Image 1 (cartoon, helix red, strand yellow):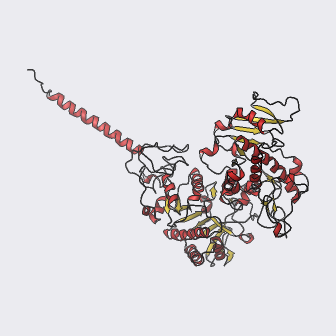
Image 2 (cartoon, one colour; image 1 turned 90 degrees about the vertical axis):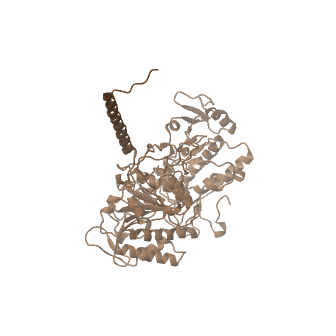
Image 3 (cartoon, one colour; image 1 turned 180 degrees about the vertical axis):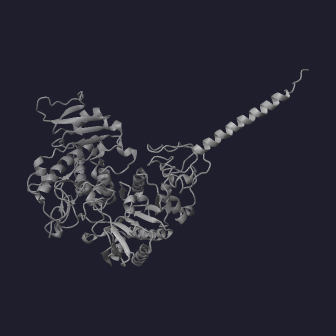
Length: 639
């Protein structure tokens, strides 16, 4: 029987050496790969070493843990996912923002308690930037974080007032801590008891953070950062605090601090920068004590009461800083021209007029609550929405309002000329809403023009001393009740809801290319004019002609052939539609849109001084823009 002979001695040695070399190569390869795929906190707290996130999920992907039975969240168009091979897994306060957890298990709530160590991990150059809220403001918070990370700012922490928000932010890769507020996860509304509770929580949070020894930039969630503000704050190293204000008249025309002696409005605590000095800590403590002793006290009012106890003198030099509070706090007022309010940014366009680059906009001075704030940011293309917002199944409808130049430019700016301009637009929007409802499309609102602005008190059309130009592009909440349009009306009583988008929607880079390129121009024509024929065929230029005063049947006949077209652009809505053939539907539609419009406020020295807009003003002979004669007459047109 044949036997297997052992290898010669020389070959045995050779194979041993060869195996050792191969093993060394494999080991070296594994080391290199692990260094490539491992995130080390030492590379930079909160970033990927070069200041950019290593991996993450879509901004609006599901707020739930990864599941083994479902695919992972879709990657964001801005950040990309890296392999899971890690040598030292990072925790929730050292990994990159938007870097979602790989563990399916939610950490214990105690892991989210605010600590100095937590702030240390997130801070950069001894500065931490903080906002807070409840789940009702999730989209605002995501928008706030997104704008900061787009500016390569990652030293961020978000306080969660309810566990629903905490979990949502955790699974989206946002560094979040538990404020222990046990807040309800709904919009509480300005001035309510829960609103005041949120204010007290803000002050408690400031008192908790300042002893950690870090500079604190505290922000409301309804503001947006447009430019990195930290170099600006560094220009004033002596300041204990820099705060924004509600100032609407410019006291300076450059990027200097406001001339504090000329500021006549409240200091606004939606944006303010604290340094952990003794004076700042004393103010924070006394502010906390005041609010805890009076649960009806508005946090901003309490702050203003304290800092206004002493105003002045100015510090030596030309910094713009001054002494306040107890005479030791060194305070500066951020210029409203570049740390903008809702008035200086959206109404006056102050940064553009002064040729300045804004750092921030805070959605104050508006009239529709959170819905109005969201819409203002959308109009300015400063709000990141879910992808579905930019591509609805039914498609969109837009139109050119074709406002006569005389309505915009001729004659003095009076109450009558303002309402004549607005009413011309309301009539076309009324028709556009009907056509959009009929075709089951989302209406892209036109750009709205006003001669007079809306305010809470009597005035002469625009506020004296401001840079508002007449006429001006007015925000939608100046004319429309946005909350009512979105939420308040039942379909059973008022017919189907009519969806809408902001006037800038089709210029927004977030709208997909396939939506923008799928369009049909609809040229209205007089039915009896030559060439005005109903046709189901588009021309080579991508437009059709369509008769004015068309019936519901004519609309359905023609546009049912174009359901796959994403955007219908109408040349006008003047006399474009006869109305719904079904009387019940027409009645419901009228009841709905009557409630869409709001009021103008206010005529000086009149009580009541407001005037209601009326969507059907043209059906009331002799209609004039007049305030109610008595309080008994004070009701909207639909009441």
